[in-house]
Length: 353
Figure 1 (cartoon, rainbow, N blue to C red):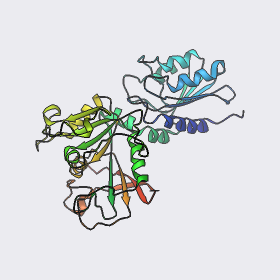
Figure 2 (cartoon, helix red, strand yellow):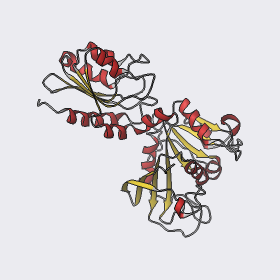
Figure 3 (cartoon, rainbow, N blue to C red):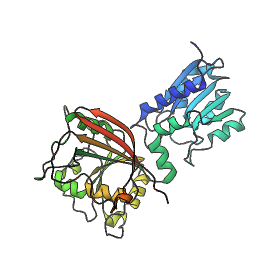
Figure 4 (tube, rainbow, N blue to C red):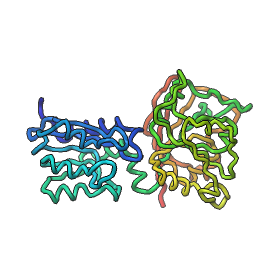
């Protein structure tokens, strides 16, 4: 097998890391390649599930004795603590690895320090190779760990003129089955799905991740969170059906803001405490507006159907904008056709302080 460059190896490690999306939380996704002393790939691995072997351990097991004198290329700084698994920094040292190339330092104070341990043992450490790509692939976990609350994605579905339902309240179905299937795949990548009590009362959603063709549930289900300031969620609501864990977050439990409703920052902090690193906000327009007004939305995924209604509820209500100059500017990062619909992905631009 021909030797590969460190840059090529890191590109492959980023690809491997992505295989763990939706299965590793509250841990990060991580990919690793082991190159022998001649630069040939002798092992590769990724973190597949929380509590399972880390990417470095999988790659070391494949490499065996050929890891000695070689290079470990890993998307995140090797952990330096003992949790459900042992420290990867020590495993790399024990295997005789001569060099470790890291894309992104670990921001978790509990697990960080691997680079320093490796250097102290005489291992060469290189930081920052393909760092931007590794950051993008692990953005939810990294963002959550750095600031202490989950990475929040607002998802909505609307017609081309921005309506989420018709004037008579009917909304099934604004978008196509292809788009709805895509949403269920998106749910499978997050730890929690949020909806306001108004959406629960109006639509009685399940908020589960499932196969739309046969109705089967995905093996891993996100936590269902109903933001319900005064505890109005009915006992027979479908979010209470036992198909997945459900938390009805009330103002009495979480804390209230100045308006008497659930304090959103406190809600996100509590979700982080519960192990939620990525959350999907699905409804409704009032709650979405409140999160946007508070600057708590990290990414927007909109499914736009080629339909016009001309009247009816809009996908977004008050987001704290009263004039065009105060509009929430977005950076478009992707536009993809999903069936007959468009999926538009955008990031809110940070406003100048």
